[in-house]
Image (cartoon, rainbow over all chains, first blue to last red; front, side):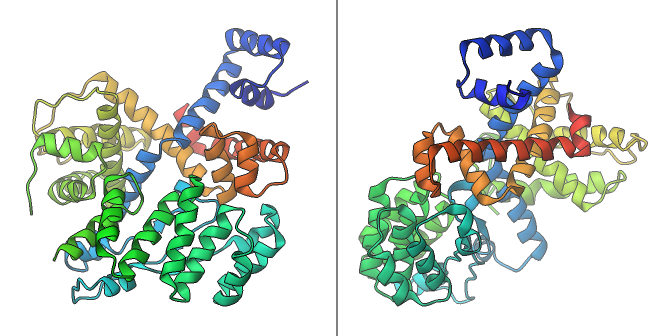
Length: 245
Length: 188
């Protein structure tokens, strides 16, 4: 006998026997308390999927925080965002630290890269037991976190079945300043077409192109990012302005 | 500061456009802040009410329920005023306003409905944000109708059976936390 929670969740997932479905329909029409509970489950699901509103709130909070800090020009405020990517699209909590622009504006591609690129923090290590990823990959991520990028690359390049390995391989290559290989790794994340890391992979690939002075391809990709709903759309738009100067 | 007309502002809110949001904040937040801090609120209240009002406007735009025949400032002020009066009532403070100098309009009834939905969903979203990241991800993926087998693969779980179990655990935890918030009873 399933409890209310199981009945409701399985009903939403269309995973009940005909008899159990009948039971749910009966409860919905006769028991207001059950009906309220069911509505709560539906509303919570809808609320989770409201990514636009979650993002709007985040932008409003940032604007408020930045205005309180009142550090100067509007453009500098834009760069002081701290993006919490995980909520939107990653299994790993990816934290990009505050990106600070120096007072002196520059439009050299390499300098732009340095301003925008900040190493990802892998916190998968602390919770890798619950994730059950391949133990080799876990070891590689430990190396990555300890800044032992060559060792991480050695393992990750032989373990490219999953998107996590590909993504961290790209990041490790950035850290070893092999931007061409990094770009290839991010491309393979994009080819994998898994929504988990698409936005991040696109962003880092564009930064790698910029670092290699391939401005036209970088600009093309930043334009795509800018015109998409990516978390990096504002930064992409700012970079495009810097490139234009 | 570039100025925008009502249509541009509404489109900017609909698009979550940071430049327009910054303009809205700079141009209108001071009025909201003055109104709230002069009527028993503090700056956090002002920020909260301002944010909720923008979210309500966003929702109404998405539902195509928004027609503004006054200035944006008057409309925004009217939504904030409504929200703050409701808040004062909840706090059982006197809901007479000492300062209420700005022009405002009577809002349609659906604003109240949207405002209640916004408040409830905010509570759900706040608790969702507090879940562990694998819980958040597993719930997001399952709500995006990604097959359990694929979820197990993405999350590095052993089996689709475990993915399903994990999804239930996370949802149960989320619902439990939501229900334990004192605001929950108030909002239902």
